Length: 408
View 1: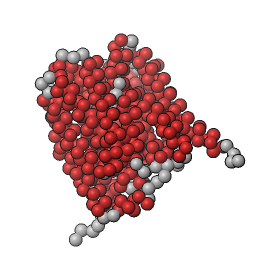
View 2: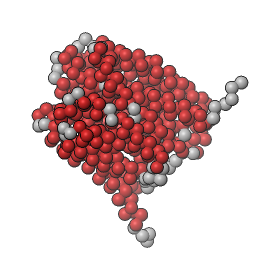
View 3: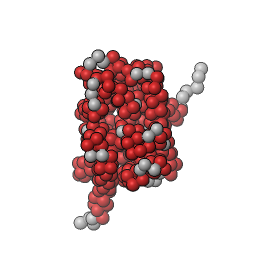
View 4: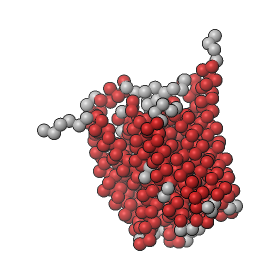
C-alpha cells in the first residue's frame, strides 16, 4: 500500500501543476496575440488597430463576466471551474482558427476571454486559498514565481511557430496543448478538492480562515482605492505587454526587439524570487507601491534612452520586476486587507474593475502610437503608473491616520 501523501507534498504538486497551466494559459491566450495579430488582420481585411479593438472588446466582456465567475468559484470550487475553463479555452482557440468570417472570429475571441477568467490567475489564486487559507500568500508567491516564464517561453515559441505555420495552425496547436496538459491537471485538482469537501476538511479550513486588516467601516474606501490602483496598473500592463515587441521595434530596436523582450520574463521571476526570500515581513501595501514604482521606472528609462539597446534592456528588466510584483499583489493584497472569506468573489470584482479599464488599453495605446507617436503614449503610461502608486499609498495613509487618532 502506498504511503499517504502529506499536505506539504500535495501543496507542492498543486503549485507546480498550476504553474504549468498558468504558463500555457497566459502564453496561448494572451502573450501570443500581438505576434499573431498582423496575420489575423491580413486574413480578415482589417487594420491592426481594429484587430486590437476586437481583443480589447473581448477583454471587456471577460471583465464584465469576472464577478459572476468569482462567485461560482466560491460556490463550486476553483478546481471544477478551471477544468471547465480549460475545455472552453481549447474550443475558443479552435473556433478562432476555423473562423470563416469576422463575426465568427469575434465570437471566438469573446469566448476565449471568458474562458481566461476561469483558468488564469484569479482562479488559480482562489484554488490556493481554498486549499490552505493560512499559507495562501506564500503559495501565491510560489505560483507567480513559476508562471513568470510565460512570456519568456511563449513570445519566442509563438514567433518560431508563426515562421512555419499560419496563425490559424498555431491556434490549433495551442488548443491541443490545453487539452493534453491543462485539462487533465484541472480535472485532478477538482477531484482532490471535492474529496476534501466530502471528508469534512472544508469545515476545518473555515475555522482556519484568515481575517482582513481593514476595519469594517473602512472597507468601501479601501476597496475603491485598491480597485483604482489595480485598474491603472492593469491599463499600463495590458497596453505595454500586448505591444511589447512592436513597441520595441518602433523605437528603433528592429530585430533585437524579441531578444530584449525576453528579458521581461526572467525579471518577473527574479522579483518574485527575491520577494519569496526577503519579503516575508513586508507589508502587502508597501509591495503594491513598489510594484507600481518599478513600472514607472521602466517606462521612464525607455522614454529617455531609446533606441539605445542597453536602455531598452533596462526597461524590460525594470518593467518585468514591476509586473512580477504586481501579479503577487493582485492575489495577496485583497487577502491581506479583506481576508479569505468570499475570496473568489472579491477577486472577481477586482478583476472586473481592472479588466474593464485595461480592456481598452491595447486599442487605445495602438491608436496613440499611430496618431501621436510612441513618446506621448509612453508619457501617458508613466502618469497612470504614478497615479496607481498614489492610490495604493493612500490606503496606508488613511489607516495610519486612523490609528493615530486617540480614543475618547
